[in-house]
Image 1: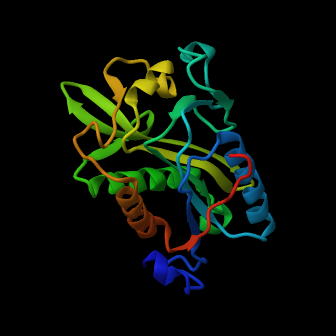
Image 2 (image 1 turned 120 degrees about the vertical axis):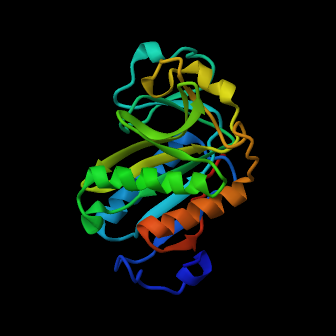
Length: 240
């Protein structure tokens, strides 16, 4: 089902749920207003006054610290702003050329299975990468989506960091389309300091992709796994 078709649909035939609001912010979104919006939207979903939502955006360059982050993994504390994220995981980087998707889904209605939910998100990202000829996959003991670079080296192309509050998810995923990979050097990404494990992007893999084309692939893979979506207006913020 396309975004246009979903505007008139009331429920997805497979899931029995209303289509998920699918919003794309065309401008870079500061981190703190984004976090505040998510908190408010999650509360509305819990109260039954708003529907589920996926929000696609780019942030200006910044680092976020998850609940398991270690101070020694922040290698360049003065390089970019650092924010406490409140999600699981360790340090991550967000910036231009990286697609962030904040996922606000009601797992009470989708089955209260956290492991299955994370697996679905990984499969979503793997299917998205496959549309550009990139073979990516899960790795035992390492959350996220990885690409085999040969000779024992593996690079992460997408990260997952979610939190559940009364079974509603927030935070979400980040996929490296064409960010400045040098920006990752300011942290130990996700706390993994093995020199055989690095960070890559579609551009780094020789796959130049526009964000518009990437979003189309992300949308297609999402509907295959999670169900229908409908286009919505993105959040607006003052004093950008």
